[in-house]
Length: 203
Image 1 (tube, rainbow, N blue to C red):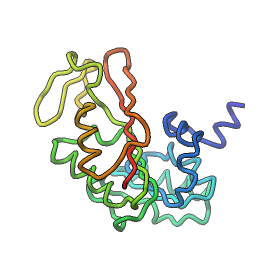
Image 2 (image 1 turned 90 degrees about the vertical axis):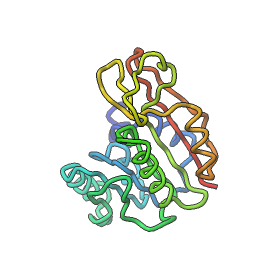
Image 3 (image 1 turned 180 degrees about the vertical axis):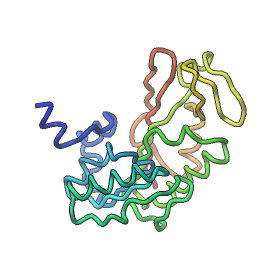
């Protein structure tokens, strides 16, 4: 059974898998993965006839995704996957029904950088489209992180991340003109880091 699941879904983020089980993205024809890495979160979409795009700053990752797409969805053009950054997405406004951004936004180097990434992802999303993000936060570990300035924090595991909190995510949702399609959910990893799922629909 595990082999069957792996063949269908790849190594997909369990929180995206949850949305698929709920049928949330069934009508999302055009999809972009911002910071796609080696394609763990687009395996299912490629295999099931979605029109998939992806960007990553790592040329090796893009080459790997292009190879995966050639195998799973041979009609997908290689140019759907390009080397780029989240603040300079090379696709048109209102292009996508779903934008996935998993474990990318917390690498922002400042509040300005975070907001530049966030707004460019929002730009390419269609009205009514879904934005799915997983990112580091201080939720539940507020007293265990140390600010080093401009939204960046030293975490107990020794890493440095740009951190959001519940209030900032609610505020960004409002400022973007979006609405939560799932409650904000956070996983606390042994009090050394916290990862939050932020799911917003564009009004």
